[in-house]
Length: 461
Length: 115
Image 1 (cartoon, rainbow over the protein chains, first blue to last red):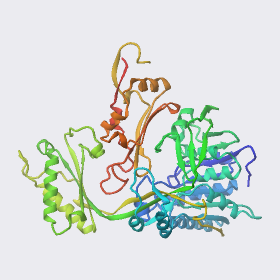
Image 2: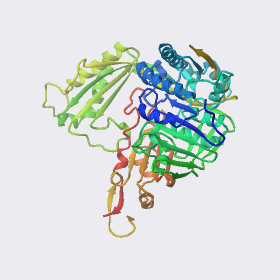
Image 3: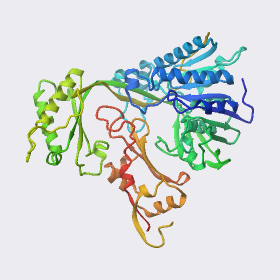
């Protein structure tokens, strides 16, 4: 394995998301630059709470098999560790094991031998309850304080690990026969694998976290945005360049990247501290490469990790319908209020709080809801009525009643007496299955950055 | 193109900015970015005094004290605004899972600009 010199560590990240695919030729160009590690993130809360709530993965198993096979080939060719974070999207223990099985399956099929380390990050609910009682858990942003009932209701709770568990896994798996080939981690702060490689090699943690922060999104920092990206971290700066020759990093594209999906552009809180980018320097080294310096890292007085959890919250059904009659559209809010009241009256045996009826009015405020500043509706509306109830059949029954009531609802000035809705699809009521809700998004203080995260090393033959 | 001299007309940000976008910042926040082409445009918009906490409060129907981040950041020639989400991402009643289409009111903000 190529060891990082005292002066430079090189990291290759082929994509911002494992499972989305990436150009293999650019990945091979990256391998030719002799990286000391390949890092790739698989995690995100961005597509919703159903992953944590229902144990779903972000991408299909087939998509992961495809990407992992290319990554493992690259790992074998370069003989450097491949670090994968947040397996399956939510990074639950379940999905760490799924990734492990996929890797074992590929290795068996290809006749490969490899050393694999798993880092788990599900947090025991009893531990959370104890820490909550001790006042060591607080909301992260505009979130209600954590409640024990919510912890119980959560399907699973994971913590975003920092760099330390990766460093520990790299240390523990190293022996006379060599180091680890692959690390698969549970939920991780996205920059952790890249930061861990650099911090372990003795580089400045501030630069390590900043480079990790940029690279975890692949070449999203380039113009146009891309997948494969290479980072060179040195003593007092790092450099970043996309591997696709048609893309370039510019000082503004790299500087502006930290705005993306972040609360604040310069202060980025993570496990164990806050990265402060307010005094960074960005220099154009070549037409396509940018040098970054001046990043600062403020270690937290007490180490915290972010907890994430989601619960299931009943079943949903919807109907989708169009409206084109201007007399109807002009009174849509009043008509819907009456229809909902009539539907509720019809289901009077079901407690009112046991189900929800939520209209979405596209052409009026379907996208922005209460945030919509434009008050005039369009000439046609798409009406989606969402019903959430304890069972699928009840949700569909309520949804059906709301639809038929709306279809035939009388309203002042009505001259289209045959029906109010244009229905594009059957089934007219569409069952959506279980709904989920994020209900844990809190910071928990921890005494050791590694103690809660078991590491298992195995040889796969 | 400094609006300090000569005739100006109220011009929407969609004609001035390089990027106007919205996205989740975690499951409980929406973040809005207005990125300008260069420092000159950024400074001119900042100097106009049009983009304020009060304007955002009005456009997004959110009390000023609930605004999580609001600022002009010259290192990146950008305005960044972070608001609480109306509901936790992806739950019942969701209208925009990724909060990727909450930026449109910003595009219509009109700034005095050289004719």
